[in-house]
Length: 267
Length: 264
Ligand SMILES: Nc1ncnc2c1ncn2[C@@H]1O[C@H](COP(=O)(O)OP(=O)(O)OP(=O)(O)O)[C@@H](O)[C@H]1O
Ligand SMILES: [Mg+2]
Image (cartoon, rainbow over all chains, first blue to last red; front, top):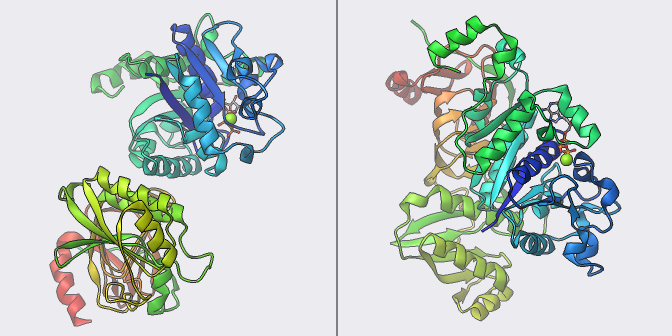
């Protein structure tokens, strides 16, 4: 059975698309058959982050209109052919598709695939409903900021109400130095509110932005950066591996305090 | 040592008229004479305040989940639909949803002909009633407090739980969430959102939480913010109205408080 996972957040700009692109790529690298769907009709980005924009011929809207077959609209990744992208239409709004249609698309797409990742638009309106309608699991992305956590909490509640109980938390753009100075919410603070299991913490890293601009997901790097490693670890955990959490503070302090933390057992 | 703290008082609320609560009625379960009633909020005039089907549906799910442990298998449910228009698909959805909790829909009471027809075509026994019936007392909000409502749930951002009696939440009330009751409010968890006890004007109601760090507290007609400086250590606390406005005290002092409140 394939797993249909929606990547969602409520608040915009917290890293949903970045997460979807990287997890899709990381799972494909592990040999899984993956489809990623851009459900952000009218504001599509996922193709850019994957560097696949220039290969798009058809989009989900043409598939639904019967103008092409689903297989024709799928864009195969140039690096890992077991990753495909179903692009969103850029010239339509979120009301161009209904939840029923979306469900049908996702179900067809999930045939013979291990994972379907749905990149959800920001907000909780029609686009959100479309993106979540076929999902059986959710990854909740938030940054350690009050407003983002508040919106994430709203989304967790809405998903629970539509019976998507399997939810995992990703805290993105953490800045450990700021947390240490008490200038940023810690992962624990975030967890205390959202009360869903944590699947990964991704540090704030400008190389993520660079990789976004190049259309090269950061998990593809030869030598993984901390952010790349964090994302790769999330993919592994999603895939059932038991991977310990990274010590993100490591780069910011000396060996001495790391050892101290180790002995206190609070890494 | 005095452990009491005074939250920052804000404005005084204009008195809520007793029937102002009625557009705010939510889906609820009630047992009466050995039957389980499922009461839907009335639709009323076609105004923007009345709940849409999506709202009703979400509340129903919420209430079913939040009461999960207490449903006796095979209990029959009487749906009090009042003046709500329900189509066959919606009624079937309710039947299916109740069935997941091993509850079965025995009968629908409605004042709308279309709803009655829909129920009959869905194969549910139905009783069409005049809009005012013994089962749907219109003066519900004026009547003495409803039975306490006990919910096991996290009240998340954007969620609002209202009840015409005392409200017990087994779980947290998160920032952005709100709990509103005509009676007391007990939160067996952290209260970080907004709580309004005595919402129809009773200033002797109390708000209790294992961990009280609310965005805002309201009791009767008074409003207060939590103290600016959070306590060094959280402990179960009670908020109540004193001569000087809303005050917060350790819950272990509740017995002292009870004699104080009865002196009011
Ligand atoms: N860990 C990170 N470190 C630094 N920058 C990041 C990180 N994650 C995401 N970003 C940057 O944040 C911006 C927003 O990311 P992204 O487009 O993935 O967010 P989104 O949630 O999909 O936004 P939208 O709601 O608009 O769809 C991008 O410029 C991206 O490069
Ligand atoms: Mg996006």
